[in-house]
Amino acid sequence: MTRIQEYFLFTLQKLCVLLNLFNISLKINGFPIKKAKTVLETIQQKNDSELSTYIEAKKQDIVTYHLTHNPFYKTFAKEANPKDWNSIPVMTKRHLQQPLNHRLSDGFTTKNVYINKTSGSSGDPFIFAKDKFCHALTWAGFIDRYRWFDLDFNTSKQARFYGIPLNKLGYYKERFKDFLSKRYRFSVFDLGDAQLEKNMNIFKNTKFDYINGYTSSIVQFAKYLQRKNMVLNTMCPTLKACIVTSEMLFEEDKVLLETQLGIPIINEYGAAELGLIAFQNTKNEWIVNTEDLYVEILDENNRVLPYGEEGRVVITSLYNKAHPFIRYDLGDIGKLSKESTLNKPLLETLVGRTNDIVVLPSGKKAAGLSFYYVTKTVIENDGNVKEFIIEQLTLDTFKISYTSSYELSEEKLNNIKAAISKYLEPNLTVEFERKTALERSARGKLKQFKSYL
Image 1: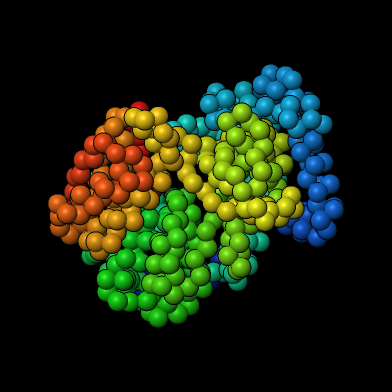
Image 2: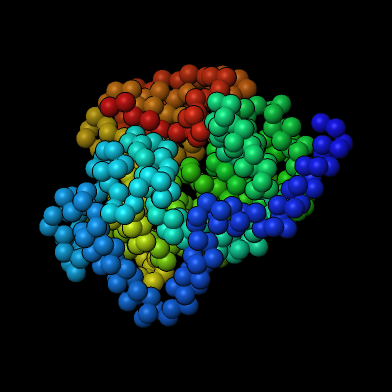
């Protein structure tokens, strides 16, 4: 690239910032961001009593709307009574796996809604829709939360650790969006030392404001920095925060990130079809979104669990009139803190997906990530293993694939087996395979546990 081309691109990007291009792009695409911000501010100004009344009213309103205007939902929720929340059925992705046109409300078509597709991490991907105001309100929520850490979608430079489509059209479309949105995208498919060194050099020469991306990829970068005895914000002092999303954040990894990046680590929880579900504030509280979502934790019989008990994460989108997401089972297992209130629910833990369950020969069940965590506590003390995944092949047989500088010793393998036997149950068969790289999804995510049962 010539100096003239570099100057042109630099000037164009500066112009994009001056024009608040992010907000403008939303307006051009028909998303009323100004109205959405005003509505969000109105909700946030309510006192506790007003907010409780608002939440209950919005729950009834959205059910009534879809029972009146959505043929799919009328058939699905035949016995639903908007004034009796327990009568509202729980829906799953499998209920929604039918043509999108069959699920849209009256007056909405594929031409006047926002359309996207879920990632399929639950095993049940599907296409969904949001009306344009609902989608704008989602963005207003993200903009609001990022401001907690002095980050601005229009002006803050983002170091982005995300996947990217590998087909030419999708690739260049994402690159162009990155350019206009002040984002630099790092590869999550190549996490070798040579590439991570290139990443580090880019940080040295770029005034990034924050990092955003998949937990596992950023953790690998932090491990590289640890091996090199480097702290990232000493090389890139403009960095303010790191937002991790899409994958589990373990406490040890959070400590590692805080140490090696030298900036606050923010845990974000969201879903494509719902938007922002929870976001950690400056006090390290995982604040659940109560402005446009209603979040419940349910047991296997769809009964609401008390604060502090673990169950299925079920969410209602209070504003999506184009498509019903009412008592929608997201496929995650989590727990709200005992300190929660209706107006300020706090997400205490997010355990994993409901389809990531370990079933053992004794009949015992455990979250797949707990199995992963037991192994992690032993395997990472070695300092040699970079990443690993666990697969359940049969009821009593598990395979651990890992990347490392050298093969694990017999003693280390026996220690891992002993930990699994102690914390889960004995007499399990555990196989090991060292690989040069672990398989990631098409979008670059690393699935730590997978069951073939």
